[in-house]
Image (tube, rainbow, N blue to C red; front, side, top):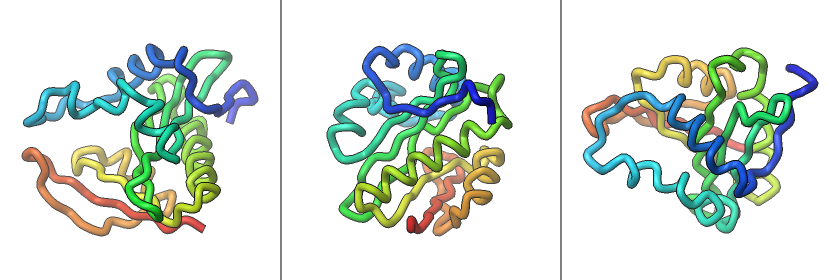
Length: 156
């Protein structure tokens, strides 16, 4: 991993960069809800993540946001991993690993013992990443016409 990559907590001045990265890394999936409802958490990162006991991080390379990720509390023991994104030009450099490691650390420090995430069946790259980081498939289902894999990982 490059020495010029740093991970830090989200700041309100990061909003545009986070939105840009999200839009670049989202796949076209038909939703029964308007997109602004599906991704409403990005309109209120502070309220969704930071003020609820979760975390939202950005990864910077030479001062430019190139990665994002958050954990949102589900209950007293569980957080859901959300919006883990790495700009394609910066992938395969360990940036996703670094973000996930820091998100796990923050979740553990917050007293959470479990991390979950749902991933579409068509996103084999994300599936391989999750499985390489000890996430296990706990359920498969169909959601909005797309195969959905539910992953779980126990935190230390």
